[in-house]
Amino acid sequence: MTLLWTAREMVVAMGGRPFGNLPEGVTGISIDSRTITPGEAFFAIKGDRVDGHNYASIAIANGAALLVVSEAKLPALGRLTIPMIVVEDVLVGLQKLGMAARDRTPATVIAVTGSVGKTTTKEMLRATLEPSGKVHASVASFNNHWGVPLTLARMPIDTRYGVFELGMNHSGELGPLSRMVRPDVAVITTIAPAHLGNFASVDEIADAKAEIFEGVVNGGDAILNRDNPYYERLEQAALAQGIENIHSFGQHAKAEFRLAEFDGAAELSTVWVSFGGETREVTIGAPGRHLAENAMAVLAAVSLVGADIDAAIEALANLAPVKGRGERHRLQMPDGILTLIDESYNANPASMRAAIAVLASAQPTSEGRRIAVLGDMLEMGEFAPSVHAELAGPLLAAGIEHVWLAGPEMVALRDALPETVHVVYLETTEELVNFVTAEVRAGDVVMVKSSLGIGFGKIVSALLDKHPAFTDTERHF
Image 1 (cartoon, rainbow, N blue to C red):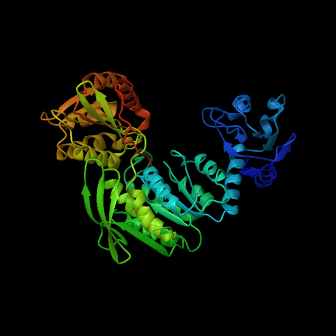
Image 2 (cartoon, rainbow, N blue to C red):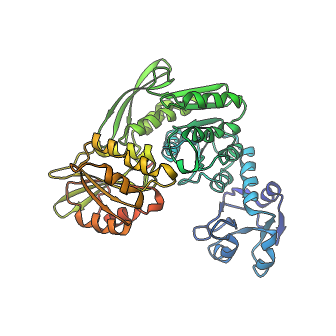
């Protein structure tokens, strides 16, 4: 049995108090009593909605080796016989353990943020670095005040490359996360109007994303999107934090990792990348210019950390989108194939435009249609009516003739589309689920996209439940 932490290491790192006969150590760290596996430590974090202390018995039943609990909650847990480490605040304890993990490993650490493309870029980095050494990366989108320390605390001591996604929806959130992670390389994918309702302007979003530079180690690197209008603002913010090694990617003539040419197809992309005095042809196993642009940032990071660039380029050819972020399904219908593009995990104006472009490049079969199934973009605040209405432009430019909508904010898009577009608007997600499952037909390409809170994953699930999927070409990154 390989231990992730000895119990003594945990006590010292967290400044905790042993309670009971502690085991030698633990094999992992968990904050979810439902998914904990035998031998792991359960951290009873008190969140906004639930208190982990209330689920301690479930964690024990599922094999927890020890509990990390708060001093204030210990009296209520006295009947439990499992060993515990008692701390003042469990989340703070997890943060301390995460920082200890960063201290003890010689891993080269890359942190990724940006308004769009964080998770995809993180997963690209995982795949492209794996041929060069052991990679530890965030699971799913563990990019917030509990996800980042949890990912840090789970990092094995023999990690070669650590890849962390850092997220925020308010100013002041990213800096503390970066100071925990202490990245050797900080990547900002792009700046766009995401979470715009929480900021007065996109300038403020750029400044909030620039907080990632606060934790970059001495002599570390920053990788910025040269095509983004906020490049100079981010560059100055990096310099102000003492970062001298600033690198760029994009189509800009001065970009170090330059997207020289893009050839997009329905299922993949071919790009020509200029860097280090040469131009390389690179195949990316998923469609979309936005993925090609993110791949430039990935190749920049791979190069800077000294990993095998040839192996990384080869790995890019085997990539495909993850669940809810462009994952494709070919569904069997009685008279043909339905193509489903699942973009249901999140949405903002930039990612909406990217998804619409991907739909435009997809090829329906027979009498099939390209159908955009769109739901509200959340956290747009006072800008919500305008940013939803402005999606009419990209839809018309892409030639999308069928647009099916739900959600109160999508009224603005409905009203902005001309009569030449076949628009269906329903008030609720549940109504749209029923409509979509009844009205799609063989040959269609259906792209489903909304913010996660709108629940458009139900549309995807309903289609997957109703129609069997081909699995022969499924790949994941």
